[in-house]
Each structure stands twice: as structure tokens, then as C-alpha cells.
Image (cartoon, rainbow, N blue to C red; front, side, top):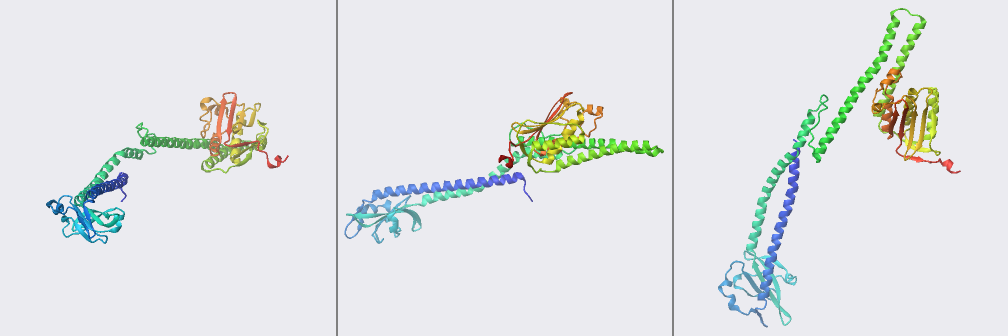
Length: 470
């Protein structure tokens, strides 16, 4: 069974803190041990300096100068922190020693005397800290002075310290885990509230939002991000519902016309002229539905098409060929103007750009009288741009934000009976977004409209390789 998030947080924080405490306790013990050893070594050095001149070195042996003093009771007993002294020859054989050693001997090591080291050893069952220094007479080494100090009290102190640290360590871990678990639970309470609220939001109450605390911390940012996501989902769902409703309405109208026309035809025999008129009416409805279905499929392909393959396109030549084709299909003149004298190369998807311009030019021709002008203009500022300019009916400013919505048509166009489905500009906007083109529109009621496409990267005046040779 998987543990809760707060328990995982508590365990992770406890493990990290436990490791830190472990290192701290090791450091405390190490510092205490080093301090104790340094203090004893300093005392040993003082004892060495005090007793190093108290020996008589003759040709036979090395002896204490004041033997009587070492026979006093205070040296014959092992009391608190006693000092043990022994004199040995060069081979380590005992020559003389303090009475408190009894039958015991200090450890001899010729190598350690050279390095002036101190080490821990045993005198009987007593642990001591020992030093060994050479004894000289007339520049000649005659033996060694072994001097040791009891380490029992220091060992007891270090053992007590380690016991205390080992005892409180698990207590600290338990306390840490419980504290971390409680604090982790308090920390994720806002997340639990967010989770509970989001679980209550469904398609029926998508307008509800998570209460915003107004804070600028991570919880506040998460709350606002989820609310923004819910807002986008709500807008998308509303657009989906509106799209479905509009599509149903737009398809129902030509279907109703087609059905009514066919019902009229079968009520009674008609003349050939009447049959021809009604069939033409039916064909108009079918053509309208076909055009609408084609545009719906085009819009669906754009939304699901993914990344478009971009290629290098020379705009001036491309637009001249496009204008010639559209002019022949629409049966009207479309003017072309290039604001630069050199070729303009851009990286874009040619088919997508063609579909955008075909829709924009079709709209321009549809809403501009035959006496008006339709202009396709290309130029280069900071980026290359294409503008479709008309002198048609224009669009009121309050409708500019809505003209790119699917099936949206200005009421004036409906009143004038201008044909259309309201999908052309929606397709233009989707393709422009997929092609990374910036689409803007400026329009004035009764004076016309200008749709502008701006490209991301351009190369102005890039001459073909064969032209660069001239």
C-alpha cells in the first residue's frame, strides 16, 4: 500500500535531518575525544619537563636522584589521575620505576619515542596515556623515560558522552518524524482543499473556481493556474457548444429549403420550366451545404494537423500567380502592389499561406462592389508582410473581435443577402496560428478593411544563385 504524500515528505525530511544529526554527534564526540587527549598530552609534557632532570646517570645504570620521595605514600598508592614513571635502558629493560606501578611495567616502543608520540595502553587493567622520551648523558643516549597518566576518568567521560548521544539519537528521530509529519500535514492542507474543490467541479458547474488566497507563494500560483485552466476549459466548452449549435442551424436551413423544394415537386405534375427552376434551387442548397462541409473539414484538419512543414517561398512571384488565378475565378480585377524592388524570401507552408489568402481575397471580393478596389500588397519592414485591402462595406469596431469566431456573421451581411458560412475567417485565424503568422485587421464602417499578415523571419533581397553571377 502506497503511503500518503505527507508521510513521504516526513520520512524524507527525517532521514535528511537524521543524517545531519548523526554527523553533528560524530563531530561532537570527535572534538571531545581530541580535546581530552590534548589535555592529557599537555599534562604529560609538563610532567616530562618536571621529572626529566630528576635522574642520576652513571656508568652502571640510570637511577632516581631522590629515591626517598618516590617511596612516600602518595606515590605508592593509585589515586585520582596518578602519574606512572619508569626508566628503561636502550633495549627496554626496566632500570627503575615509581612505586605505584607495583609489579607492572609500562610499554616500551623505540619507534614512538623518535616521533614523540603519545598512545593509549594498559598498565595491568588500568588504561593509561603514555609518552616515551630518551635520556642523554654527555650527548650520549643512555636509556628512556616512560611516563604515563591514567585515562580512566577521561574514558568514563567519553563513554558517558557516547551513551548519552546514542540514547537521545533515536528519541530525536522519533520526535523529528512526528513533528515533520504534523508540519507536512499542515503544509499540504491547502492542496487537499484544492483537490477537494476540483473534484467537485464537473461539466455542469465549470463556472466555479477555487478560492484564491491572494498570496504570491506556490499555493497561490497553483490556485491561479488551475483557475486559468478552468477558465480556458469553460471557454472551449462554450465554443464547442456554440459551434455545434451554429453548425446544426446552418445545415438545417439548406436542408429545409431542399426538402421544401422536393415536396413541392411531388405534390402534382409540373411543367419542364418549373421542374428546372426547383432543381436549380435544390442544387443551390446542395452547393451551400457542400461548401459548408468542405470548410468544416478544412477547419478540422487545421485543428488536428499538428506542425506544418515550412519551406522557402519567394512572396512576390507566389502572390502574382495567386492573383492571376483568383482574378480568373472571380471574374474581377485584383490589384497587386510590391513595396520593395527585390525578392522577399520567407519560410512558411505554401499550401497554408495559399488557403489564408484565398479566404481573405474571397471575402474582399464578396463585400466589395464591382466598382470598388481589391488590393493585395506586399512589403518589408522589420518583417515581411502581406496586406489584403478592400473598399467594401467595412466592419464596425465592436464586431472586430468576433469575426474570427466560427459561424459568426455581421447582421448587415445577412440583411444584404451576401452568401457565406461564417467559417472563412475562423479557418484563416487557425491556419495563421499554426503557421506562426501574426494576423491583424483594421476596418472602418463604410470605408473598407485591411487584413495584415506578418512573418516571423524574412530575407529581404535574397537573390537566386544564378542571378548573383551577373
